[in-house]
Length: 236
Image (cartoon, rainbow, N blue to C red; front, side):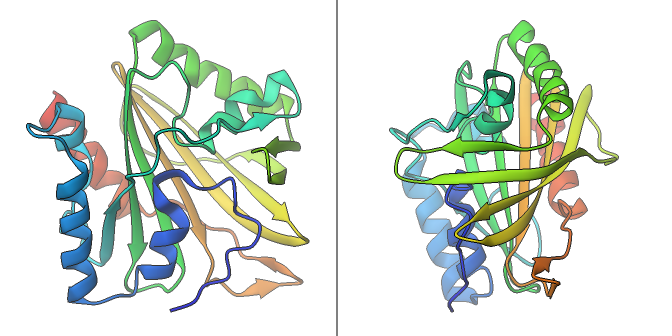
């Protein structure tokens, strides 16, 4: 299957584009994802790795482990006040993370719908500051640019967006990513539960475009609810 991925070079977290392209696969894809997840996890698995979504946790989605996060370039915003938003677009919501586990989910029912879900652990002070900094950056940066060295993306229409979810506190916003003249909407939700930060990022490359712009997307409730339930159950 082929999905147009232009304009989303920064959205590499949790193999987001890979799962968008492969999410409609059948049982063979499910088995391959399970093998990849098993092979990428050290033995014994850490508590955070056990908490991350696994194949079969959310019906209708193929789950893939991101095995290439180490060594990637940190996204750089064009202004310091926008850096928290740029970091969320990368492989870790913040470089102060002690540990991060990434997962990519591709919908097998809605072609092109993909979700990046990550779990990160912090000190309590750093976890709280991350959410606070994101709220400030959403207000200060209605538009900004992100540089990854070889690629630059422009984010516009950055706007806080209501999203009911559990946890101690959360922040949700939508934006549009533009590269090479192609605009793609993205929805991001960041949740803090104690010292754990859960980050969801969603795109839908299969959504119909209206006036050259694809329709708004939203982090799927079944994915968000299932991940938060595992956080409560495994991490306490």
